[in-house]
Length: 447
Ligand code: PLZ
View 1: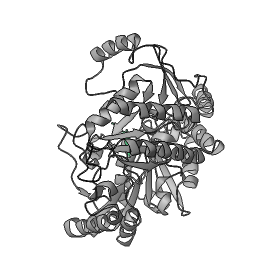
View 2 (view 1 turned 180 degrees about the vertical axis):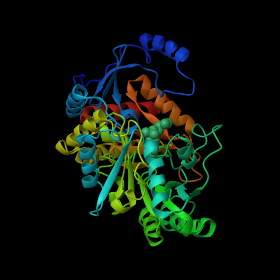
View 3 (view 1 turned 45 degrees about the vertical axis):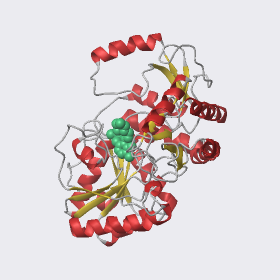
View 4 (view 1 turned 90 degrees about the vertical axis):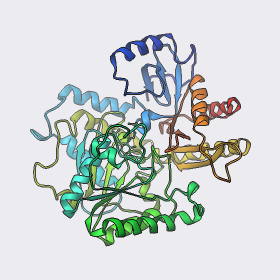
């Protein structure tokens, strides 16, 4: 556990004067297209706390967007990465290989669902993993079409921008996008016209109908879905949807890819979110939580699919960097030792209990959802909760701002910008978790 004291402390305005000075330098030097949720400049972070240059200590309900599940300075991550740094920083796995890369792939084969033979390839970012999953699926099937879903998010590179649903801020002005990407409905229970109970069956039927009639199943290389949709609003596809889509893929020789970049590695209280409905994907993309904050990503899947590309067809200078691999082995060790799946489930229990009590008092909370330590509230205009559910992005922004002011780091998301999401490190103490929830509760008074 990190040396950062596990206590919230607000000693200046947020952002404080030193952060504001740095922000002025940043504005002059850093491209305007790169945003920040909260411009407090970090000095240390660990456990459930982010400490800034002004000496404020914020409770972390963001984990750097679902990355630092083991904390931002986990002992095993620091120890293993430090040792690796001293031995060597890089050789390029494509030039001379090293054991850490192989060990991460062995761990991935063990931890991902299914007992079939599996292989992996390592990359640097989530978007790169998704790109490679598409390459691999196309090489295997010799087909071109890629099916993605409403509200999906897959990255910011050209192919993955095309695969991402939301225009602003991800795609606007950045086209043209790659061809052969097709979007179909997802079972968004809260907003499904005929009700959440019908969403799984109806949405899967619609999606399958669109694929068969508009694309032709025999032209589809891959169907790619986030088992819990992250940036799109922490949407859990209604029960039955994932199994139906996965079965359709299998029946039609289509590679079924679970993008578990945000939902994977204990985040939802399972190693992978798709396990909840017993879905075994052909390929899984991972990143974020895998390496305790170091850049690492992977595609893992059926050996025969993973081996489809010709030798030399996959790779990249830094993919599976040895320091990132060492960090990943440290993160996985921590997840096992501390039973972070169990911790995530406990976080869900505490959060959902408290949020349900808040929803009784505040009818701007239209929906509470998510699993494990991936929990969100969807905000609607007061009085529309059971009617047309008008999205309330202003409330999400106001609540986030009020939380930030009190020293609680929270994030928003959602196609309509009206979802407040909570992604605490899985190692957060229960006192900090409850203190964070107190701050959220109080924030409702101000909106
Ligand atoms: N797939 C499911 O959640 C990254 C994006 C933040 P990279 N999500 C955070 C932002 O605004 O850029 C993500 C994801 C899922 C793919 C990605 C992409 O992962 O490591 O950001 O490339």
